Image (cartoon, rainbow, N blue to C red; front, top):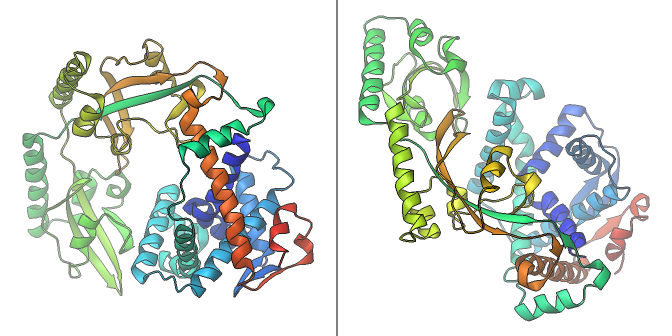
Length: 463
């Protein structure tokens, strides 16, 4: 029962709230040329097309790596689309609104995500045969509608909670032979620190790019200087060219400079998360700029890395002698923003909670954890990751084994948070069914006979 409720919750939230699924589905229609050939349902002023269902089905099939999906998948997708359209229709009746700024911010966020997937704006535009502005125009109405639906759902279920008594009642009503069996699970904390660039390295990088700028101002060729000196490997070989750029594509520190430059003007030296830059705008075309830049990075040194290791050793000692709590250490020192916000605990990307089965844990980390007892801290460990600029960052981390359960049947003592989540999901599902029943009659709903075989939509057919 718990798994069934959790799976239903995952499917619903994936459809209504997942930015990736939505955008991929929309792009899939554009790229694959799916024909908008049949209206399957009308909810208020909003339609559901056969292509809406098929694009999501294909996306889920791709995510499932070609493995067959359950027979009822298309019906589940259709049911979720009906729910989304009803949220949207009711949002209009309740005068729920969204601002142009919210829509634009969401468009920018999603476009940036897909640029990161394709590797560059040019590759994204080439693949779809449209400019970023055209893609934004294509999706603007859909994004606005989805934001309205999201707001309506938030309004409809604001404040829904489960009490400890409801959690116990939910657990007591699970049939004995249906109580789930949990494998061994771990809760893991981590504190991560990276070396800071020392002042000497920053001054050296600043001096170098200032010399490059002076050389260009005196008549040197910008492209040649970029090929010789720029540390942006992607653009250096092309004379520093970034192609045509528009607002929302680059980091704010970069955009604030290039959108103030005149054609042919070389910027002053400025800093971004990537390092130190100079830039030049070759052409202004409306809201677009054809730009080149040169990047010089301030590099960390081995001594910077050693300093971090020494600091982590000191923190570890304080943890082990109990002069510093884990939560305090994570909040004060950790540079992993996601884990420090929840007491320094790692989040399992597969489940969204803080529990890991051993197969879900990175091989190098599991070796360290196998040496720990519950409550113990690892030695200071080497750590590397990619930062927001795509660069590999090297640092150190301390790992804490907070809990480790043995394989067991679910019980309230060990698994309260999971049972609480399942109880809340069941309560949400019941509240959702009541909400649909209440608002179904307030909104025009017509469903094509081709979808009436789906058991999931019986609730939509009752007046």
